[in-house]
Length: 254
Image 1 (cartoon, one colour):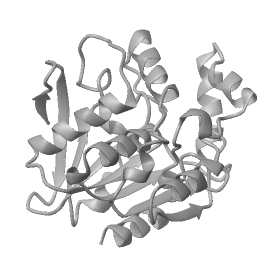
Image 2 (cartoon, rainbow, N blue to C red):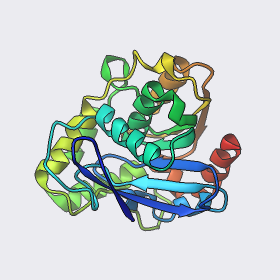
Image 3 (spheres, rainbow, N blue to C red):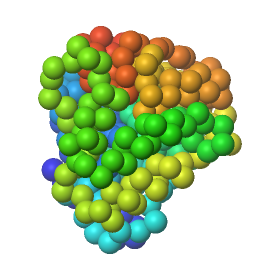
Image 4 (tube, one colour):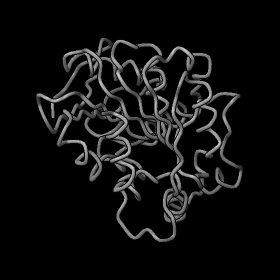
């Protein structure tokens, strides 16, 4: 792990693995999650790529004052990480809120993004299809065990029996968690999506109620020449079916 200090003085923890002389692949995790989100997943790309992750502000080892964070601001942090890694175009794979961050990164920093993969994410704003009121109620349940059970059912099919790293960074304070929730909820990249020039693959689980599947078609229709692929599964389809999804992504990035 290394530390990159942003222009406003915030220390970001950066992790690098894989082929140090290979092309760069930046992985962007979901809301309120650190690089731990990619445990068991980044390894599929390490045979070919220099895989880079970083802990968002308020997660993992990136700790400092809580501010009015945004997906656009996280994208600027991602740009700083890529620039610190040598700049130049990199492949970017963002999941859930990480896909929202990746939209801003690709639109605002086109020189840094060679290829883009957006998984289980949405454009945000008035054009997005939001999760239902019943899902929101389950995620806001005051009982932790109930919230975790809701996440398990929203992320995975009933056949899944593994251990998940996708349910949030338990070290986050309540203020940090709220700031992440606001950042994700306030995302709105619709107007910028046509400016994305990187070849783009949009992936989504066919039965996603956390970020409804209809958002995939909205993104693919808004980003020039984007490809759309639906895979069986729910919000965590890329984890549950990693053995099928990772090769698909590697083929696209090739």
